[in-house]
Image (cartoon, rainbow, N blue to C red; front, side):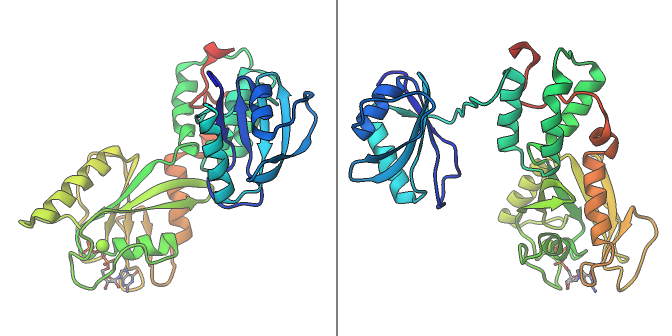
Length: 312
Ligand SMILES: Nc1nc2c(ncn2[C@@H]2O[C@H](COP(=O)(O)OP(=O)(O)OP(=O)(O)O)[C@@H](O)[C@H]2O)c(=O)[nH]1
Ligand SMILES: [Mg+2]
């Protein structure tokens, strides 16, 4: 069926119910899927997709319909195959029929993909703030910062070997994400994990301790680390009382580890991953460094990623 498409609106995994959105010639599509010939707009129907499932289906408008089968992966796969046989292409282009205008449509899409809890309240405020707004340079700068609430920014842990980076990573993720060892050189490859820092979700990377190495694999890992450092919005420089700070030219904060053994004053924050001292302060500092409070509380519009004023 030319120009007809479908998008899975729910997550592609097991659930009670799945929602499949169909666009294009939806009347023909619903007829072919279910055998039912009469479809009135906005009226929910309990119908059979033969040999697959009993589903709830609704034709929202002449070119938009939703079908809601049980959320088994096997049922979804069978429906996907049937849709493909009917010539309906799978896309990832959700439509939001409940949106009243382009701003609301873009906002609902951003809301559906935003990773940080802090994005929710702010995004819901934007349709009112963005109406008739054109961005100033300050708006664009603040918006770029706030976009980190939608797409998790990268943050790296960087320091000399054996300074406690992996132990800190494990304490932040509350699981054994990275190998910890008393000998330097335990981490040979970058290890990444998603962490919620007081409402801001970030992708944190534990990097190998910086040292000279002739080992081919370790050299490759060091190369990968350099790429991650360049891509990250913030470097968390790590040192314990026995090691020096590494020098970097990228934005950074300094975190002194192992404060249960020995403290040092020349840092932004002191932590002990073993006792938990300073850990909450660290996560809040990461959030405030990446998305400062003044951006969150500013009453101007957020020209969030995915929204362009010309769409109005
Ligand atoms: N007492 C104490 N020991 C710690 C703490 N954090 C890490 N350590 C110890 O320091 C040693 C090195 O820890 P790692 O986390 O492997 O250090 P790393 O910086 O990841 O080391 P590399 O991967 O070699 O770069 C281990 O023996 C840890 O148990 C801490 O907060 N307190
Ligand atoms: Mg390590």
